Length: 403
Image (cartoon, rainbow, N blue to C red; front, top):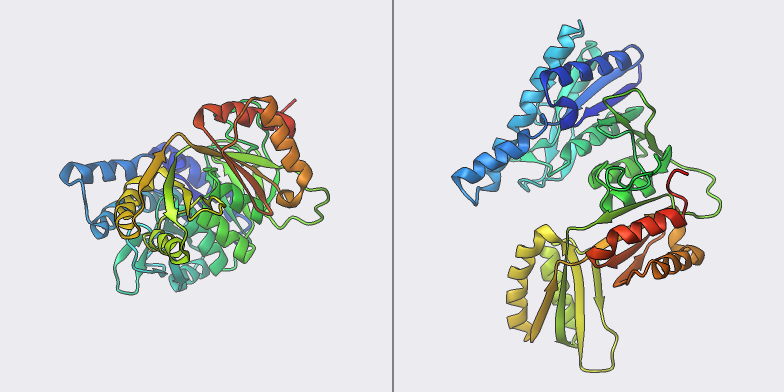
């Protein structure tokens, strides 16, 4: 039989009753497929463990954090296996290291290097249901590692790709992928099908439904993913190869409010200065969302970039050293910045879409700070106060809400 990887998020496993209900969904798919189940920690478990570490020290070592936080998934796999056994199905629980999820040595944000999967294959051959800890692996130095927030999505899709699964089903607490956040914007529509590229763009631009790294693996290995609600039987959203695109049009929107804007004022126009600034930011692992320096005939220029807000302290520390070395006179910073992204295959090269965005935002009296485009997205940066108004204007403009 072909393989399906089924992943349950923390809200789907919040209580023993939730776990038993999730196990019944696995039993349904087991009738026709071999099943590998991937589970997150029970809702709030990871946050609670992290909070306990902070009660002991404000600066816990990354290695010890990984050792601590992986405990949440170990609890989930054991309980889930018990729930499957209760339904008269043979199950066996595994940690990430036990199934051979080999990662690099970066604690708290490791990258998967390979998946051995021998024990998974043996379990499937014995008609057992492997229940695997999401979010974790082991380095070649035999150190326990974690894959970062949302890492269970990455585990599930990576296992599916490694074992040639037919598809991966992500069970969560929403009905699928919507044209915007349905909790914040009333009337948004559920999307039936998305291309791998569209889902990856949504994930990277702020949508919380699927982790960007999971989206990236799915795109690279053409691994179909279903996003479904674990609390009902409604059809969800299918992420797959989409053929036959005609006129490019917006398919969905997303936004990100937790951003940090930095402007280096009057930087000397020397090529190695720009290179040095970018290199130091990149080597420190800073995620640049936007980067721009003014075009001028003068000897100095202003250099602006935007990063995630949670990297603010790290950015400021790096800039202190850069300012001294490059004799930069002044730094301006702001957290009153957010982004809004319009996603759709081919829209970045469709001038009519960009024109409609500018027209709609002008009519809504929204001031645009900056714009970037790609083949799959048009990304608008603006002050936070404009965000809700801007999103509603574009949802209406592109008919992304229910009538």
